[in-house]
Length: 222
Image (cartoon, rainbow, N blue to C red; front, side):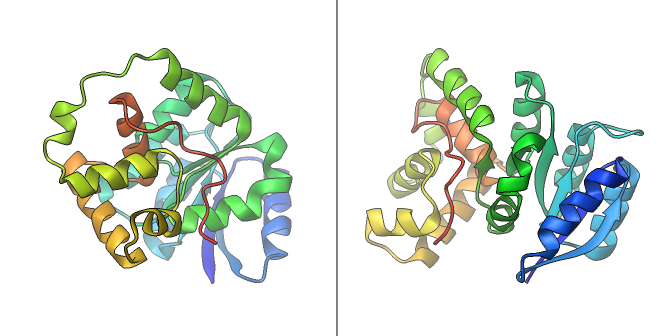
């Protein structure tokens, strides 16, 4: 059972999201909030698997909330649901640790799968957001990767390259002919060495240094 907290300052939006999620037998909405303070308090009290977070909140923005949660080291995955698709907001949130970014006009169709993916630590990006990540990766020249890769073993580099291409742990294990547990161990080591707090952040670091491509919005575990 995946537990989730919804934080949005519009009661109608929260009610709509809750109705969608309540229809999924494997998802349990354990709390709702209307501002950043609520988000921090509910995550601290309830430790949900996923926090569905709006960007524009009355007291602080989603970027600040996400940064504070990551600084505390909580395991809750942050899934952004918003109408905003400007690059500054998108990349700011992804780089500070959000694992997914769902535009609200697409949320009705994708919300359940996005929550499931976020609970597994997988990246979920709305197509419009994914296209921006792709454009930035293509527009930016591949930088010298020697420095960032120097701390990684050759196998960890292979895992990071596949992760940056959007493959999930099962697909990486299949490609490298190793167990899924081995892949999970490699990814944990990669996070530590790169000081990354999420799969998305590790993938963006890899892309910036010339490895792989933008994370796909459908990189889910089977």
